[in-house]
Amino acid sequence: MLINELIIKKRDGNALSDIEIKHIITLYTKGELEDYQMSALLMAIYFKGMTDKETNALTQAMLNSGETIDFSYLKGKKIDKHSTGGVGDKVSLILAPIMASLNIYNPMIAGRGLGHTGGTLDKLEAIPGFNINLSMEEFKKNVAEIGASIIGQSKEIAPADKKLYALRDVTGTVASMPLITASIMSKKLAEGIDGLVMDIKVGDGAFMKNKMDARKLAKSIINTGKLAKKNVVVMLTDMEQALGLKIGNWLEIEECLDSLQGRGPADLLEITHGLAALMILLSGKEKDLKKAYDLSVKSISSGQAYLKFLEMAKAQGAELEYLKNPQNMKKATYKIEFFAPKNAYLKISSALKLGQLNVLIGGGRLKISDRIDPIVGIEIFHKVGDKIKKGEKIASVFYNLEELKSEINDRLKNCFEFSSKIVRKRKLILEVLK
Ligand code: URA
Image (cartoon, rainbow, N blue to C red; front, side, top):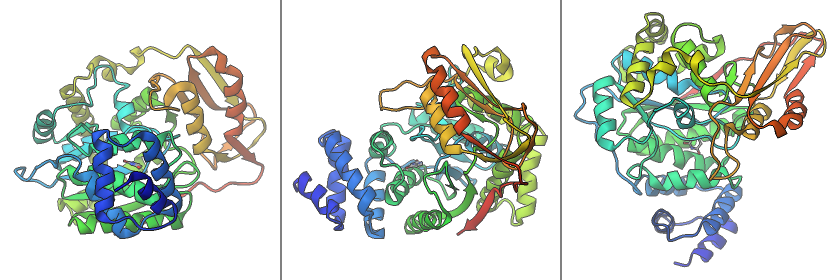
């Protein structure tokens, strides 16, 4: 099989066979297929798409590029949640300890930032000492003893996705339905879970820009789950504006700590408890959605989830001093603030533009080798629909590279739009699909 022929086949809109897909993934995982050829193939997939059969073959090939974890010896259910990626989306970090506090196992293999969206692993690595590269044995031990652990893809778990994820991030090939499905499901099927709740983000700051595409992705993920005999539930949630009030790796850890101690922003908590309730239903611990939601709320109000977070972080090497006293973390050198130009309602707070600004200041990557600056980020003070007085603070940007000042100023004001007419608050949870 010649790789250039397979690239041409896909470029011309033809379906690749299971064997061809397996061959490509095997070669790429072994380092025997060049990034430039894989990039071309990814772009062809981006434009021509894949059939359900191809998507499933790609998922299986990526899953089989590594090992599958066996958690069958654990008595309780193993349930995970995954997001397609958004701006300010730190939900996983709050959900995992909530689940653990409710005695539901949550083994979580998470990803890094993709494009303008943030990644759970990058956020965790903002915590001094936090190790996302546990051995498989350590990961299994932590899940068994604590209930939750969050790690990155090791060489054992879907190594093909690890390489492809990084390549897609810098080649403009993230927002592809089959590639997202295979990327997510290869990792999730390797986790040895019983059920999965997917948070598919919809809007300006998401890879799925409208509900129709989000529903298609939901179907694709649910189908792949069914073929693997896993229960998958999908929630579509709004990503026109960022989730919560903080964007940036350490800032988002701060917001998680606040949320776990009962001081979180309302939108972040609504999505977190909504997803938690679905996970609790999947686990069989509760049958009633409202009661499941209340269990999640109580896990935070009782302080149990916060304690679980500290336990999980300690087991992964975190310096607890910074989690208990986040104010002791070093601050970015520079700050730019943006104020409301008039009395008005906040009409747009663009998740996409804010995410891109966060990448520009070093909170994300422009190329594979870029190093993240964990301290930089953006704080926003209002949500869409808020009534704002002229001169009120709308956002602050914290950064370390002085030469970015004028570009930050230009971009920051373009992130927001105001209206003299009343603007409705945005609905957060859009749909649930099974
Ligand atoms: N999350 C993933 O793990 N993969 C994607 O492709 C997008 C979001």
